[in-house]
Amino acid sequence: MFSSFSYPPLDLSGDHHIHTKLCNHASGEMEEYVQAAVANGLRSMTFLEHLECGLIYEQQIWLTEELFCQYFEEGFRLKKQYAGQIEVRLGVEIGWNALAADELLAVLARFPFEHRGLSCHFYFDGSRHLNMLSSRQEHIDALSAVGADKVLDAYFASLIEACAVIPCDKLCHLDAALRHLPGIRLNARHHEQISQLLELMRGKGIALEVNTSGYAVRPLPYPAPAIIRQAADIGIALIPGSDAHHPQQVGRYFERLG
Ligand SMILES: [Zn+2]
Ligand SMILES: [Zn+2]
Image (cartoon, rainbow, N blue to C red; front, side, top):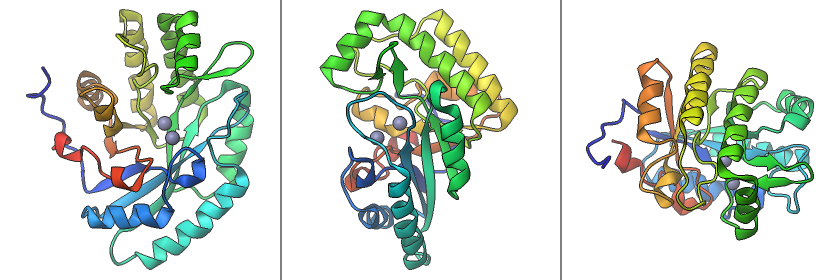
């Protein structure tokens, strides 16, 4: 259906969403990701490691401040070592949590992040945080029990709130929430929220990520092409990212965006 869709111009010479083993749910040393990017012929790459604060969650799948110190130490070494081959940037994927906005802002002020992506991964059900992007059946079941429309409504409302509060450069995987829920669909209200969100982004100069990890889950990137087009039509810049959680995933599916 979308095979004839032509993407607005995208600079595919860099992958600007790359994780590392430091987040505790990816594998591979930072250097292995740099080597993969060089081998793929990329001219730039951006590590975008997970920052989350104030979550009530059973696992720690993000970086603590101590880990971010290690991240910068190794990242600065790699920047120098590979300077002649690739530009390496040290960024952050900021996971929005309305209950911890001040804490998030404090961490952002403490580290010299070169690129800031904004996301929202978790839904708070009143007692704990549920991962809206997880494929774990327990989370899918709990979110289904709340109701997909209600969760998505809260998700888009959270992104609108987050964009107003958190200084950032781009919005990540805009329509990836509940991606593992079979038959998931956005309704008219969600599309209204997305239009409002895109207007807010345009006003603040926040770019939209075109996240190719979507191709591994559905045959489309995040967000879907119609939303990418809607953003480009109002002048929002587009930034590609693979959301690599393994070195072999650097630059994955970029050929489908050309
Ligand atoms: Zn991750
Ligand atoms: Zn993410």
